[in-house]
Image (cartoon, rainbow, N blue to C red; front, side, top):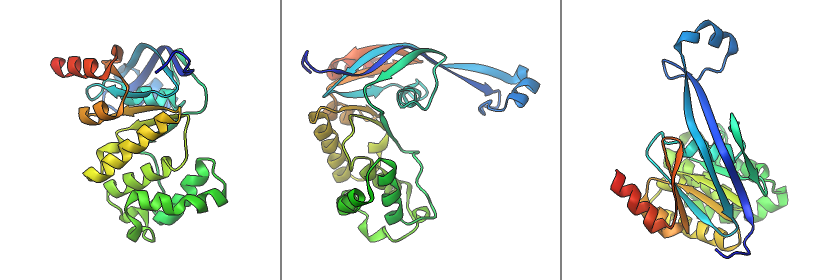
Length: 244
């Protein structure tokens, strides 16, 4: 990264809370919340996280399960409202997660079309990129079958292929590289590096330290909702491994 690279994301003193019942279910209904107030507890998912991301950076996000990594990605994407602090983005971030919705009763082919349109492509652009998307996914022989017949790995591969079919200034990848065989993971990691070199900013949430080390130029470590460490991948990953 050079000094001339412009900021693309500013996370400023970000706090995110969840209200849950003792059962662990989210407390969404206000009337239910009033009637079961004693069973409600507040989970402080993020506690004052601050950092700045720049053009051309690929930022790994690491931490144990429940540390707040996915909550951070959702907040950056604008899907989770903070209780305090703010997120500023140079353009709308695109969140790619393993749980991103595809329509199970539609074929893979129709999901590619709808996914491309949802990303802002014109029908003509979708048609132009269709073969590349399918080729990247490696599941061409299943494209005429309903998505509900796909394994979770096949669906995730198609989802990733759709998401990276266009360039994003800011791309958030949440555990999406954990699926597929070695060849697909390597291809996906190379695509992320290509996007970074095109002056995009990529966030990669992963439990794979190998993927983080080979793909990212910077790593942030989230621990119990706080920013524990931010810096060189080797140094942060070394400290994280030592702590666990």
